Image (cartoon, rainbow, N blue to C red; front, side, top):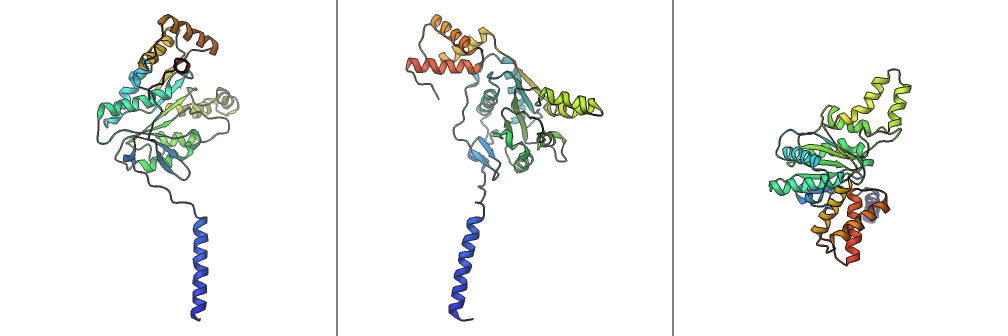
Amino acid sequence: MTDSSIDALNKKLDRLIEAVGRLAPPPVPETDLGEADCFVWQADPGYLEPVRKVNRVDIGLIRGVDRVRDILVDNTERFAAGFAANNVLLWGARGMGKSSLVKAVHAEINARAKSDLPLKLIEIHREDIDTLPKLMGLLKAAPFRVILFCDDLSFDHDDTSYKSLKAALEGGVEGRPANVIFYATSNRRHLLPRDMIDNERSTAINPSEAVEEKVSLSDRFGLWLGFHKCSQDEYLEMINGYVSHHGLDIDPEQLRAEALEWATTRGSRSGRVAWQFTQDLAGRLGKPLKD
């Protein structure tokens, strides 16, 4: 083969290698858990994206849930210290601060501990639950203790990914890594639609076993923390806390009247409604809200 033929062949090979390289997926970024305290799991291609600025409120501003707050703080504090703790399901009324409480407790525990190995919070999206075993595999050798958090977790008809969650939490061969705990919020106590459980009961050969299979998912959570609709006094307490924290100057009687009218217009009272009123009030007063 002549030199010119070899050169031509090499050029073709270079172009072929370049073309194949363009078809190959980009390399998965390596995750340094020391880079941040909060991350979001990106299931495809499979890496942890650091969150520099976390959307959360101070734990002192979450009102009307004192008992569940204290239970969650205690469970999280024990886990962060290396002791036994439970997976937690925060379930119940919408807008009452379930996800806000998880993020606030995480920040509070790290502020108290001031450890060289701070507690990490990693959010996994509901649609990525079937990749939970893969994520746990990545985390089990990490030097940090990790809260895996899934917001608004529930399962619909014909959705079998709940089986991945069951196995990852307790039932698999490896089980849950000792440095990982799972917190989830949901509007459903049993995570599955009531009619889905009822259908299993009516069509199964052994109805009690079929229902147990479905309900046993929530049994993987050692703590069930219920959130219920707030009273008028609790709603006003939330608003007073926000107004004081953000330095909004308004007559107390006017504040009360406007807050109640806002709740009536919305047709509900909750922490979310209280925050939305506060945002509206701050805008009308021309006052910026604190970060």
